[in-house]
Length: 213
Image 1: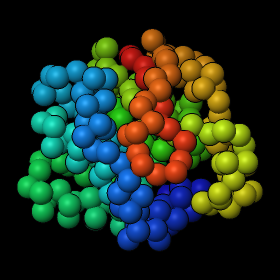
Image 2 (image 1 turned 45 degrees about the vertical axis):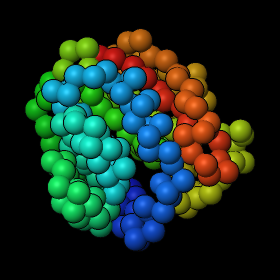
Image 3 (image 1 turned 90 degrees about the vertical axis):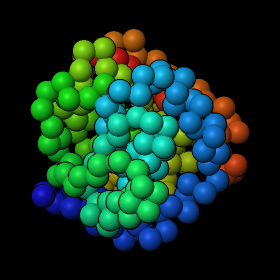
């Protein structure tokens, strides 16, 4: 594990005990409605949740009947996700990975999902090519992010200012997300704004960067 990935993994390991609290303000019923709308109703779909953390998306998807797998670079986050899934008697799979190359064969999944992940990517173009590889033909990517009003709203440094100032998507705008996914070979790339009431937290609303292979 290189120094950059280790820094990210160590950071999330440290906050893992409190991480679930960040999701307590989310309206899970609305989340599930929107996930179904974006993914479709085919429960045979295999879905990969990248940067799953404590399993927010993977567990919801499993509850909805989809076949979900979550991967993360934080061992402590994954430990919590596994314990939650086992307690709920769900069939989620959770795997540790190095943050660089996904440990799956080509065309393994019908969809990739992620939540608040894009800004953390150190080499997004290489990452998206990897995503493209493990997706089946016509597979979907749903990347959930929060709207930012301006750069100042983003300056809560998780890994340190020097590190984050150099993250390619830290201060990205909607057009930047569209451009980089298109450059990586994806089609039908668009921004979908989600209902503000999906979360009761005093934060900006969620949006989804949507695209297909």
